[in-house]
Image (cartoon, rainbow, N blue to C red):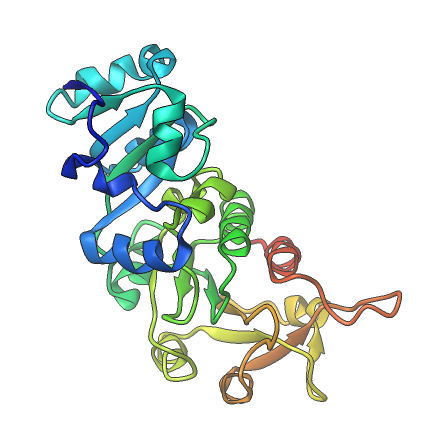
Length: 272
């Protein structure tokens, strides 16, 4: 359904307004049951994951690149206009081709999600992000999780939204590839994981921490790897509740890595 943009006050365009207001969008999008996919590549990965579009918006020159999508979803509005008009509507220059407003999928129960993976055998390696608030870090961590074979990701309520536009873009759409859901605030959320046989590892600096190499050498069958806030790390209660406290050995007077970089190191070291 091709629609030329003639009136920016058209309520059908409201999904695309104020896209640069992170606080507003982080609340608005989950409440409305949507998220924004930016670029043809990200859109296609979302569709491959079974997600459905609400609408698309682009300049005229990108229509051919999504002709097949328009054919598959003839009922979905496709708004077209000049690049200047799109910038006025969204608040930024839409230079990655297009934007798509997508139906946000319903999140699964954490226990049910983990049990459903690996052909019903259950996830063996799980990443938990607790209070990671930077959308770029979340997106980069998801990309590492996808590339390094992490079975699932759990995100606490205090963490950034993996389906926020910037997270999706930085992840290159891998947020659609890695199974994920929300988990209760930690340490309470760890109880069910421990009961299910997971050994939890809090990535933190403490007197009783062991090195990542030592943790890998313990050869646990099922692990839950916990990463904390960019500035404050993990709360002490969570560190104490974890099965192990694990550190990445550092050199050069550097005490820690950025959470996205640290997660990539840990994912590689614990690959199964």
